[in-house]
Amino acid sequence: MRTALSGGKMKKAFGGTARKVWKTGRFGKNNPTVCLFIDWLYDRLEGMNVEHEFKGYALVLQDGADPLTTGGVAVAGFTTAGMVGVIAASHIIQTLQLNQLGTVLNAQFPAVALIHNEVPKHPVRVYQGDGIGVFTSEIQFKDEQDIMFASTVLEWFTRGGFDRLIIIDGLVQSSKEVSTGALFGVGSSQEARDRLHRAGIEPIQQGIVAGITGFLLGEGDRLGIDVTALLAEASPMYPDARAAALAVEAVAELTGIEIPLSELLENAQNIEDSVRDVLENSRTLLPGPDSEVYDQDIDPSFG
Image (cartoon, rainbow, N blue to C red; front, top):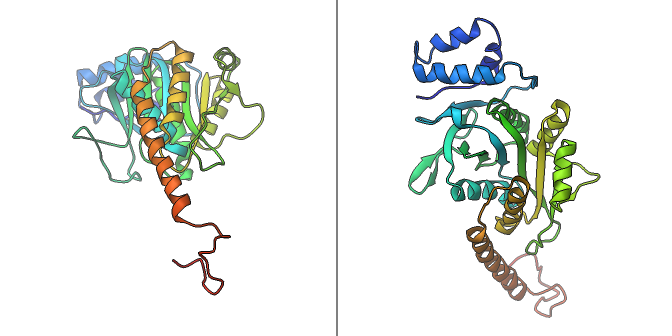
């Protein structure tokens, strides 16, 4: 059984008769699982004052998933600079053995399945465990889809009854060398900012946060939602697992949830060793502009 949860249709669920229509509509008349889910969802949404005028993509319930298990801390990670968000989200999902709750679908998404341990998966998914949920996207989408994605995260967050949202993102570093490990934070509420200070995470005093993360921070401030962004300085040249490890460590510190890091740090070391080898080889194989290798009559732009 798969249940579509599009933003427009759920707004109708606030109406008096819409609840009955949902329960006897195209998902199968008097389907007990659907009825239970819609009843639970309606009760959670009733009385909430968390409305925004942007519609998100459809969130489809995974076959056999239990929607009554949602709640706690929500974590979101996307494919941005250094793939920090998606690496961190994947590590949390695997380490805490979270269960897939649903998939985000849209006709404009690329028709692709990502294979994990022989199992095909849609690229945008949500997971749930004991007191923690994760929203992750393993492919990068166009900038014009950022607001739709952010709105989908907000709908998942509010409908799931989560307490606060933590977004993990990468901050592009200027150097092409291996990242040195800086981590910054932004909080939409005073409580979120206080947690960052207590955890010793450096806040961003002035600046701009763009993309999905920036929109969610702004909406958190506008709607009174507790949103924290963890921005790990990362290299755009390779998957920065060390930056992801810094962010995961911060998530553990902010939430009190124990998340082992040994496997992620081992992967980071392997990636960094490979990157250093590539950088060293590029320095030795490509002579500098002052080298005598270049003849004045030869154009060095051609090999």
